[in-house]
Length: 479
Image (tube, rainbow, N blue to C red; front, side, top):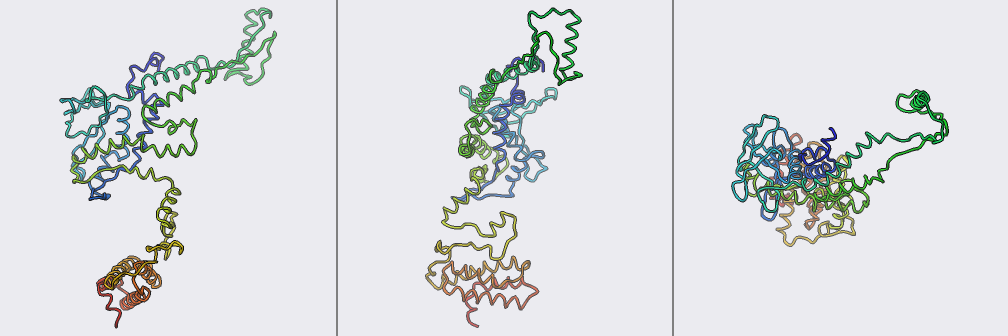
């Protein structure tokens, strides 16, 4: 790059500014990457609750929108375009090679030119492909999802934030050019030699001899480089240099980065300006990141995808997309554990659940929640009995059925453990408030063992027959 091309940013495109201006690239990448890393989940609205949907066509399109991109790639490009151009475009293209029938592509905002035919909205989008002899592609509004910012006075267009920052970027650009010029033309002068004004005059041979001697002690190729030259006639070595503090380069660099961050509503601490940072406020800044900073962009993307993309791909009514922001707001494991423990009033994780976090195998009896006696509640074993015999019999039937299902799922791998199953069934009956839980658990457990002993080679069939006996379990009380 020659000096004439470095003189101004007036003719630079947004793409060139992003490539050459580190502060702009830092902030835009920060926004795009932090939103792209979020999961984008599919839900079905079901009355007062929302159910997560997995494996449907919408989830498949979102996880792999086209043959070359993942969800992360698509959202990264989408947010990058919104940040740089204040507009972005997704093309929903029919694709018979996919079971879903559609692929979704990002149309680079710098390539797209829209044609407005009304006060609001466009009915045609023209994409000019670079490097293809002016080739253009045309898309109708029915197949393009447009993400458009707001500009006062003209609702059919948007204004790039980069234009607002161009003067700030220009100032930082010229500061960088100035530093480059100093390093190229002035920066290597670290010292010079002085000679008293009353020193004897030199002829040409004396001056040449001294110059050759001095060059032998300096430069990369000097034969005596690094040594101490012998000065004559009262000569002296003076050091010279320039200070970044004197030029206020560090302060101007911080101001430029802070200004770019300000326009994009990013807390400067989050992108490396740590002058006033500490552990406490950085933690709070991170919590606020997905609210004040990224929240509006996330809301814009969600609303546009739900309102325009889902109908294009034939999503059923009630299906909607939502970024998994909650995962980023949960805090550390220690913070979550303290809050949950305080909320439930006692231990909230079983031993096997804790062992799973450490990639340790399950242990027998580790699925029961341990509750200290001083924290006993109606849900932890100290319950009142059910009010009627009929309720008690229904509770026993349901709990025995659940116990049989659990036994059937593990007996082929671990074998029969009568003591364990009796303890678990008795604990379940006690929690439900069933009278005489111990004797009922013994009766049902002994009956299960006797049926297994009678048909050792076919435990699956035995459990299927036992589950059929569950509704009439009370007939087992008498021979």
